[in-house]
Image 1: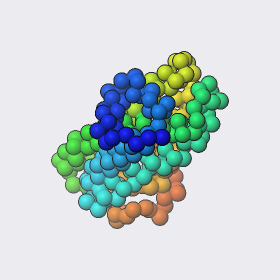
Image 2: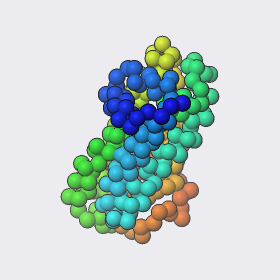
Image 3: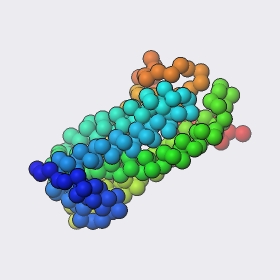
Image 4: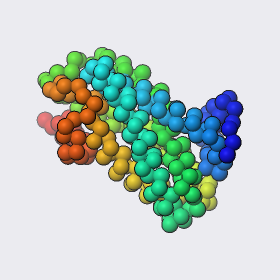
Length: 236
């Protein structure tokens, strides 16, 4: 374990974001406290700014709440799946320790956070120019909600392409790397989506007061909401 100079850590992160093979490989083979702190900081910063953009349509207070909750979901998902991913990797053919698997997942979330942070001005522009949130603006609400899902999904896809590159370099097999990646994604999706549901609201609702958590936090699930939004958007 070693502390890297801050500038060296930023150069490493830049190389990871560009997908350069060696820095991506070094992500798990050579752990650095400084680089890990930068990973966490960039993840939190990017997702917090995006979260603020997500909640701004409802109110500035909702933007503040979402800026706290969105990074919290990412960090809890990373920690929650670190142990599971560390057990799945050796079972599926890649010899990664718990620390290495945690570092690999953190790298992918750092990439997602960087993408979301860079897209946040577009989301701010979208919600700033959207009609005021009212009970009658259901079509606009569904559009903004699905836009958030698409943007977050895009950031996740790009990040996981980098993660697959890493797993393939470690395993030496495209088949094994995809098998491990799909297993990890299943765990991340299950835990992340449920945490998202519990910590709602993110965009907010005009019929409800702004609050950090709802009393019905443990009722229903994330997939029901996405399905209802799709049905409402495409219904005649």
